[in-house]
Amino acid sequence: MVDVERRVPEPATSFFGLGGEQRFRCEIARVTASAGVSTSWLDGLKRPLRELVPYDCAVLAGWDPAARRYVPVLQDGDTRALTAYLRTWLGFYRIAWPMVVHRVGITLAGTSAWRDHLWPAGFRDGLGVGLFTEDGRHAGFLSLLTYRPQVVTVTAAALLHGVNALLGSALDRSSRHGEDDQPDPSR
Image 1 (spheres, rainbow, N blue to C red):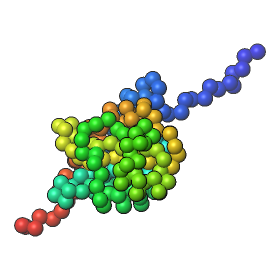
Image 2 (image 1 turned 180 degrees about the vertical axis):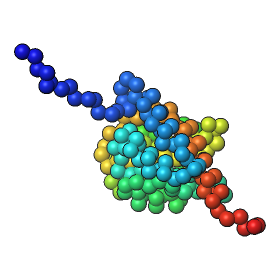
Image 3 (image 1 turned 90 degrees about the vertical axis):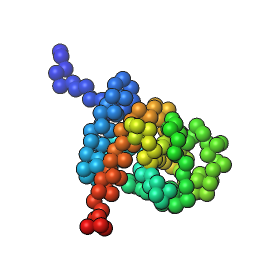
Image 4 (image 1 turned 30 degrees about the vertical axis):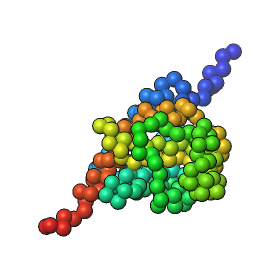
């Protein structure tokens, strides 16, 4: 007797495993394609980032060189502590591999961001990275934080590293789009 009703469940969408890097890159490219035209790409970014890291706090911030500070353009989840720290400073202005919190915990413990803002707020793991355009200009940063310890993988960091220029360039186009929307005072 053959069981014709037997169904094999379809695998859940995942950016991990065989072909995951290409799926993640394609999804981020699809989402960021409208940056500079509309801000809807920011809402579309939440799902793939949450699939990458099950975050409790996500902040994407653009670098404002005139004010010499980061300006959040996407905030999702419990962002109070990270937003409070943004009012001071956050040093993601060098091209580097994404920082996985539980792998650099001792180094982070000495920073005022972690010691004074993020640890007391309950964050125990996360991923943070400076974002750069394709030509290497600093555009901002992305931070994904979670209350759960040791949930961020090195694979997630590698996947994020692979789309850094896509995110940085989209953030740059989006910030320029915002400037273009401002009325020209000389007119």
